[in-house]
Image 1 (cartoon, protein in one colour):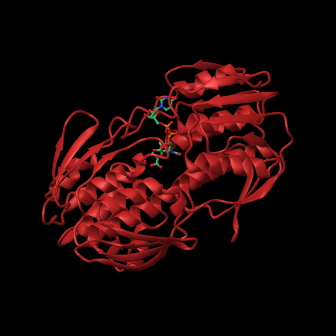
Image 2: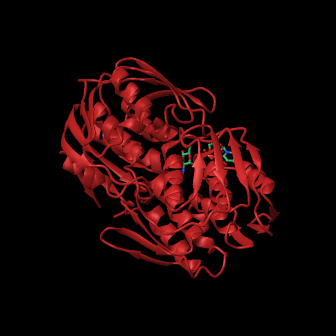
Length: 416
Ligand code: EPZ
């Protein structure tokens, strides 16, 4: 089941429920390590990145059980902090375990999470911030070893609002003695969800959602029940998929209040959008209008949906300019889209000019990373004829079942 086959050219119709957020689930599951007793995390998506996080928690001595209501984690027996090689290498978000573990164990050993297709993914901001909180590091080309004889609060200024670095500082900060004031914090909704989870556990964090956080350390944390919010990137993928194929869909649970920049872009593309507390209703134009897009930290346009906009605009009316300002290599998908007849000019590592064409032709293409793979599925839905997408395990890292979801919206998609 590593491939997806699509018979494209059909408008999407119908409704689909949006899964829980991958990028909120992962740091919250890591945060259960801080609690030292049982927590229940509801609405976690059944995706491979969550499965990897679950196996990491188990390898550290947690008891973890998937229940009907969610994932039950008991971290009272955490014994050691050596993370298994295969689980770390495959998943960058294991990095947020560093901040959680160093708060409970005096030493943490992990393999460097390393880079990936979309970029080199350095961790300098994580290390310098944790260093200011009393963590020392030893590194070689493979391993990262962290030691701490007691975390203490600090004033930290992030040069860039790194989501992962912000999360690691929060996770360490709630365990530190004293207060940590973080300037230049990431404001992504997933960071706010982590803060709300920790508040529910008894933590105290001021400025949630802003770029200045005050994390009050040294407070006892208790187990709790927490529901992960819906995934704004999955919702945006399906919303933009509808804009590209035509039709009208209802996305149940879509977190519209976290998607302002995406909704604005969808309207510029010609979509009509109606939001309610139940979700988002989208009516697509007959053909997307061209746009100018620049990715930015939240509340700007999310880099994780840049590839999907690019795919949709390959059939746009006119030329769309897309600037990728977050990661250095997020245009790998272009070579696959060109096999389908797309016309894209790349100028430098971060800029693409997409010349809209009348039709895309279905063909065989290969996913090479998560969000680019999802964008290829959208392109296949838009194309005339049959598209065959290989490399789908990348897509299953973040989407529970993208074929099932699009089938619920009337698309002809099969996993093979
Ligand atoms: C998180 O990655 C998300 N992953 C990414 O989603 C998302 O694209 C990204 O934030 C930006 O929103 C998870 O939450 C698990 P960053 P993260 O630190 O934390 C540079 C997906 O598809 N940087 O905000 O790794 C970095 O190289 C994934 O779900 C440093 O230079 O992103 C990048 O250019 C993909 N030094 C920029 O900052 C550092 O120490 C943003 O990275 C850290 C980051």
